[in-house]
Image (cartoon, rainbow, N blue to C red; front, top):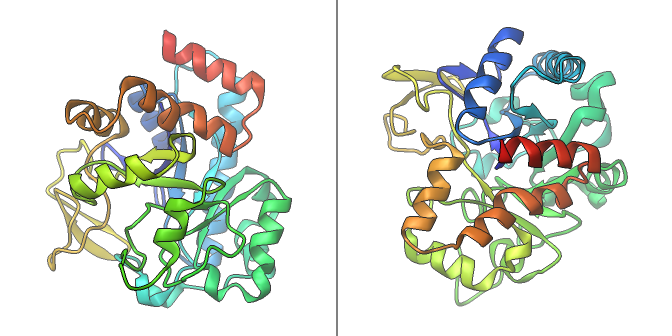
Length: 301
C-alpha cells in the first residue's frame, strides 16, 4: 500500500524530525506493508517548510543511492499547510497561512519543488486559479482541502474528502458533492470510522468511482507510539488524535489498519483496496514504471 497523506508515526513528526528519523520511520512502516508514502507537512513559516522539503529531498536521494536499504520509498512531499482557508483550519494555525500563489509556492519550495507531489489548498482563495494551473502544468497535483469552496475550480483531487469542507446538503451543491460525482477527480478518504461514520463511508464508496478513490491514513506522530500526548500544530494532541476540545487532528491508525477496518466491515473488497490503496495512486501521481515495479515487488516480498 501507498499512503499519500501521513504526518508521521512511532513518535516521529515529519515537520520537526531529523534525517535519521525519516529513515527509521521508513523502515518501520515498511514492516506494516506500506511500501511508499508522501510525508505530509502542515503549515509553518516559509523558511521552516523550505528547510523541511530540502531535508526530505536529501533523504530521498539517500534512498535512491541505497536501493537495498529495506525502507518504504518516499515518493515526494504532500504540502497540506499554508494555502488553506482560516474558516476550515481544523487543528492547523491560521496565523501561518499564506494566500495561494505561484510566488508564495516558490518561496516555500525553493530549489526542491521537484519533489512536491501534492499541494492542498483552498481553491476559492487562488485568484484566477493561477497556482492550480501552475502546479498541474508542473506535474504537481492540486487538491482542494480545508476549504469553504462550492466549486472544484481546476484541482485534480480532494484532500480527506468531507473533512474540513462544507458538508453535503440536499438544498445546495458544494465542493464535497461535486467531487463525489466528478469521475475525473481523485478523492482521498480516511476510512478509520472516526473521521467519517460508516454510513457516510458506505455512501461514498457506492457513489464515487473506485478508480478515483485514494485511501489515506492522515496518521499523526502519536500513532503507534508510547506517548500520551504530543504537540502538533502548536497544540497538545492526545491519544486518539484529538485536542482538549475534541477537535480531530488526524488519525492514530496506519493505512494497513484502515484497510482492515474497511475489509472487516465489508465496505470495500480486497480488489477495491488494491486499487484505492495502490494502483490509483500510481496513476494520479504519475509514478514512473520503474518505481511502480519496485513498489509492487516490495509489496510481494
